Every structure is written in structure tokens, then in C-alpha cells.
Length: 276
Ligand SMILES: [Zn+2]
Ligand SMILES: [Zn+2]
Image (tube, rainbow, N blue to C red):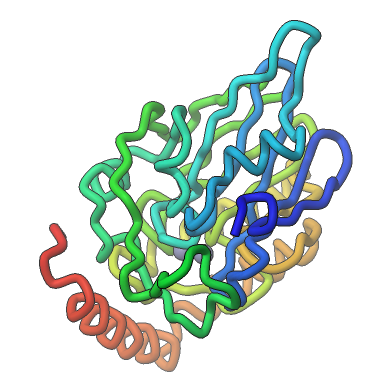
């Protein structure tokens, strides 16, 4: 199957594109965002990496261009999990938060939480392909991101907000001028996951408090999340507040503990030689 068949995309206007892996039919399928600037384009999250995402972007003519040249393209992962970072190795310019550089450089499939089954892949990317052989490939990031860094696209800027909790290197990218928030798995319109390796509940609460602050100070109009559909400021406020309220309760603590135990055992069984 060609890269052109593997993906689909939709323009959301104003240089923003949503890209999807058509044949990865799973709750874990992540949104891929492409944001064009006047001098540089950024792809935010990269999917599993089963087919070439840069080839697709190129073939579909999605990159911005001045008359002389196509824009350079930087791939940024909101965090190291396989559904977001699996395609990073396909790009020349790669940015991730410093806390997850090592996991990606080592191809640590325990920390990337790699979890894929044959039934989630509706059509094999190549003959004989099997999910059990899938791994996030090691990649050496060229851009090591920190809180407050600004990614300059020319006519628009993305500010890096370090928002640990779901994973230790989770980031949101904030386009303050346009009040857009690319939120990765820090927040989406579904159950938030705080029981994976390197999840941390009290960090997650702090990150949610920051999200509430962004809404209260009217810095976000639209959220472009790592999964599911986009939503607005009110919904962001509600989701973040609900997490903060629930995180301290006994049932929530118990279920986090139970899930993290199960996830840890299952992942260690799958990737026993991982560096972790
Ligand atoms: Zn994740
Ligand atoms: Zn995810």
C-alpha cells in the first residue's frame, strides 16, 4: 500500500490540516496536525510510522511555499508514546521535550508504551506484516524542547508548555496569537490516562491547573487534541476541572494504582530488554 492510500487529510483553514491514518482503526489512533507558517511548517505528532508521512505530505502538496522553495518541515511529538512518536524517525528535523529524548534515542518501547494488535490494522501496510513485530524506531531528536521555547514558523509562533502527568515529557503547543492549543494527550475529550509508566497524578493535577488558568486568562479558543475531535475553551475548562476534582478521591487513586500495575506488567512482558 502506498503512503498516499495510508493517510487521509482535511483542511481546517488558515494553514491548519488534520491528517489521519486510515487503516489504523483503534481508540489509540492519534490526530496528526500540520500547521503551515510563512517560513517553516510543523507537523505535530506523527502516528505509528507504518508508511511515510513526509512522502504523503509532499505528494499532497500540503507544505507551504514561497516562490523559491518549499518550507522546511519540523516534526514535533507532543510526547513519546508510540501512537504519536512512531513516525518521528521518518523526518530530518525532530523535536521532543528533553525528558523523553533518551527514550526515543534508545528506541525504548516500554516508555513509548507500544501496544498494537493485528485487529487494529484494517489493511496490512505490506505483505506479511504483523503487529507483534512493530516497534517505535530509535530516533535522535534535533530539537530538544523545554518549557517556554518558541518554535518560529515565520508569521506564527508556537510556545512549548511542559505539561507532565500523562507522561513525563508531555507538552502542549500554544499559538497564543490565534488562541490555539495543540494539547496531545494532556487533554482530550475522553478519559484521561494517568496510569502508564512515567504517568504522575500530582503533576497531572498541576498541568490541569495550568490549563484552567489558560482558559481563565482567555488565551485559548480552540483545542486541537491528540485524540478525538476538537473542542473549545468551555469544554477544556470542564475537562481539566473534573480531573482535578476527581484525582484526589479514593476510587480514582485505587483505579490508577490497579491500571498502572496491569500496564507495567504487560509492557515489561512485551519489552523485557527495554532500558527503563
Ligand atoms: Zn499518550
Ligand atoms: Zn495518544
